[in-house]
Image 1 (spheres, helix red, strand yellow):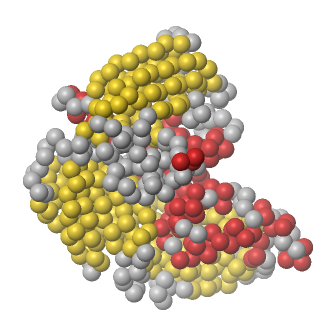
Image 2 (cartoon, one colour; image 1 turned 90 degrees about the vertical axis):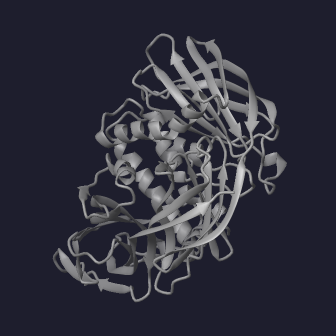
Image 3 (tube, one colour; image 1 turned 180 degrees about the horizontal axis):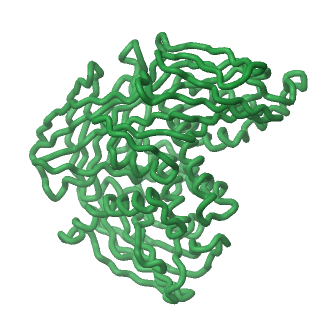
Length: 527
């Protein structure tokens, strides 16, 4: 099964809604694919974050189900030149959170992160519009006392960007578009391997921060259009009120015919290697257009015998002392091509500055170490807790085991000082492992930057500090592991169900992961 299909099924896997055969296929794939395993970890962390936040903010009861519908990938338009494209699921979930809960909380991390993200993601678009690029169309439609304005559109062979505003003319409620109530029609580019009957016009949407409760501004990203000049049709038939938990939908008709002029892009072939602590990174090309700058690079994850190279981090694009921001919103995609992992990052455009050379810096990389890393520790349920072990010179403490029917909790403590790893790949043996799976919830953790500065993390500031501290290490010090029966265990023969209680017998460490800081730079001349 290929990576794209696996990633499309991860939410179902986390919910336990798959057959034993399907779960086995997913798990066998995870054993060999670090990219998909990391995707699963990020997806689970994002969903856990939302569930935790939803205890404190207004969110519909079926919020997570709604997320499933919104972030499950469908066949989409693709950037040109043709490449496999996938917007990170985690980002889509987080942006859905902001759409639903825009003014429902004043949590430090959430609102600050959203405010900063809105500025970062939209700044270069506004700069280009001010310089006369794109079209300021100012098309307005009013229905149900709600005004929708298509302010501007900017298009090239990378993507199509639309700025949209929704205003409640009664000055009361904030509204957003709905997936089922938004339709585009236009001559879009598609991946060649997508059958025509499955071709849909996919789009991503960022709700920009606003100080006015009754107004919402949006940044929409669509795929590139085929023609140099064309008309894009937009029809909105439903809006959702995000101020209450009633999931109120207002039906209406807001239709637009948007004239579009597409700008050319420039592709700079590079094919230059950079060595980062002995790991080779191939910078393939830089694509420049008004909407974005795309950097494509690749590497062999298995090039080092001591570890698997999961990804490079803190990659920056600099020219003439100016750093171009990497895009968080839909700005990263990855694919596996044979033995090589290929990644594409999106940056603010260098189109206006048109530099003759750029500097690309690599600030770190993430590794998964399995060589000489396996250890197993017996958990004696008949003895008192805590029970302590030592791994790589650092203590690991099982503070408590709370045994229950069909669900058991294992609380694990780790120290921060003198720690010789960042995060563990943990597994558990139990008295009936065939029908049990586990997940870990962080209860205490810390961010540590390359200078050694520490900040205690929590659910409100997690994504804020990930962005602000620029590639920090994240150390967990208290994790609550939940061991549960798979929902599909009843499909097994009764003799394989095991006893009603789940009792862990061993803590198994299969490896560990860590971020390693680096500082490699390469100057590239653009022809």
